Amino acid sequence: MNIQHIFFDLDHTLWDFETNSAKTFEAIFSDQKVEVKLNEFLLHYSPINQKYWKLYREERVSKPVLRYKRLKETFDILGYKISDDHINHLATIYIDNLPNYNTLFDDAIEVLNYLLPKYQMHIITNGFEEIQTKKMRTSGILHFFDKIITSESVGVKKPNPKIFNHALALAETSAKNSIMIGDNLEADIVGAQQIGMQTIFFNSHKNTNNHNTITVNKLIEIKQYL
Image 1 (cartoon, rainbow, N blue to C red):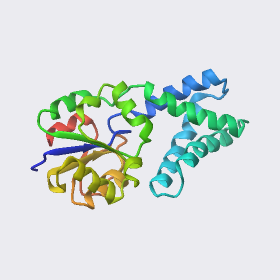
Image 2: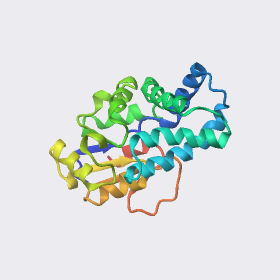
Image 3: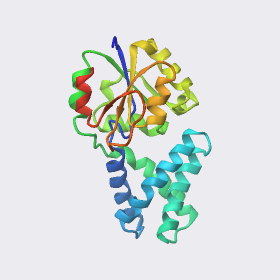
């Protein structure tokens, strides 16, 4: 494959967003006396959050709207009365506390240790600028990566080709010598393929995949290809 540089997505690929997010909500709801059943909240919050992240990638909502509306809509579905000020406060302390949790996907450390002597590794993430490095430091993976490219630092989000081209330029490499590994077909796989990068789709939820890409269901399977 002639790969020299590996670009990873972070959330939902290496860093277990759903688990860490659930722990964060559990802590802040207890502290803030938000009286909802956590399992019911998360059942509705997860698809709503995914919906707003898609709108955010497409530049159809702003960061403040994403942070507010994903909570507001979930509380509305649950019929839980809460003020806008309280929602905005929860949105802020959620982001502040999220990097404190450090669950990674199974075999993430083993795979990164395996890849480190062979490749230069980098991160390309649409996640919020202020917490991505903190997440990596807390979970013990920051030292694996050379360049960390966030959508906010570039001004566009995956799958926009500008963020991939910027990442390649920053790493001083080319598309043909690089591979993108991520969990989102639209943002990570199609985004990278459109500039000529090779890709590995981390299909942890075993979704239907009709794209021309290597697919793994577990991170450990990456060792078969790199």
